[in-house]
Amino acid sequence: MTAPQNTTSGGRLKPLPAGPRGILIDCGTGEAARACYRALQARRVNGSLEATDLVPGATTVLVDGVEEPELLAAEIPGWVLTDDTGHVGETVEIPVCYDGPDLEAVARIWGVDPEAVADIHTSVEYEATFCGFTPGFAYLEGLPEHYHTPRLEEPRTAVPAGSVAVGGPYTGVYPRTSPGGWRLIATMTNPRRLWHEHREPAALLVPGTRVRFVKVSI
Image 1 (spheres, rainbow, N blue to C red):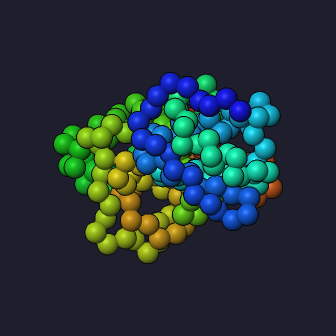
Image 2: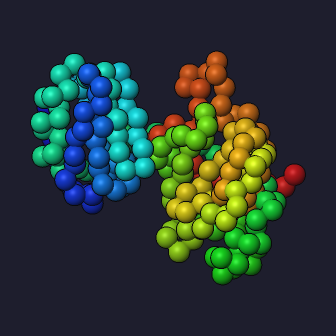
Image 3: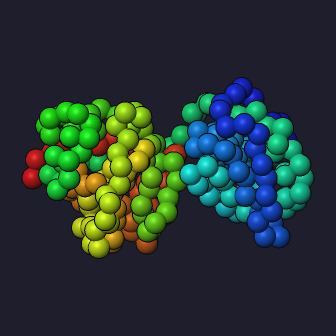
């Protein structure tokens, strides 16, 4: 197999054993994890990698179902990753109403008027970098660093389905009612799109999906 070319930040990749046929790759940074995930996806598409699952995390990628994991693990530290986004998935538009209970608080944190929060939030194209927390919940990156937002000091015990929230560097949309500590700025008009167990894939926002929020009125 040919190693990926060009460079991205993250330092040396560290493969760790994960079961009899799995490897957990510690990539060091989120940027490197996304590049590693894309490289693995590309190999699986072109047939040079046989694996049953690729699961990205914040700074890791789990590769499972590998025929000879020790051979893959031996070459991973020598990879030089690419920033190529050619394998990023489709773009999904999500209509939302900017009516969240934390909208004014986020505006103060960002140093803008509440009306400007929607303009800033909709001006960004996000990428679903990994999924977790609850089925259908994707961690969306794209906000510039000066708009990263601290979590609530005390999480809510129940966040309504369809709530659009910001927390740290991420934006997320809650697919179902659940606890949550992120700040709520908007509401998705049709949260049932996010997860459908009879659809393939069941999640609307899978890793690599590009996301744009569209402001609407309800």
